[in-house]
Image 1 (cartoon, rainbow, N blue to C red):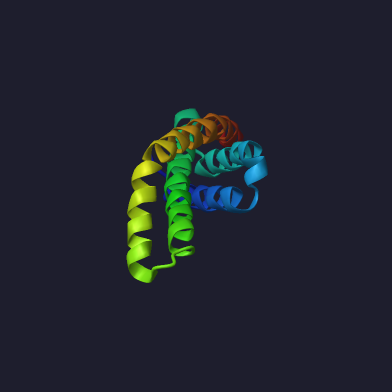
Image 2 (image 1 turned 90 degrees about the vertical axis):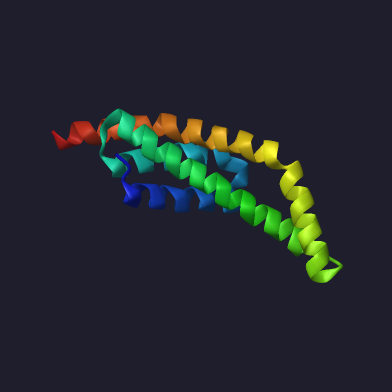
Length: 124
């Protein structure tokens, strides 16, 4: 049911949208979800599943990159300050990461279902 090619492409595009076009994140995620669902060519539920999975992977990677850049980049105490900051910010931002995970999965899943429906009609 999972088309890994579509998920990896959607994941890369989701990270790209979050990293470079964060002001247009909602519209970007809609487009990326549609593209992922269309590439999957698995119908409505397959497109929704693949796009939601790509969104979840994208959220996790963006959260890890943000925490690493925020804590290790601004550390005055070298390695120990980085590890302490990483632990503190990782624990305190767990709720934010979970809410973003749900947000990405829902937004990309909805348009992934539309893309999957359109691609399955084109195949017949």
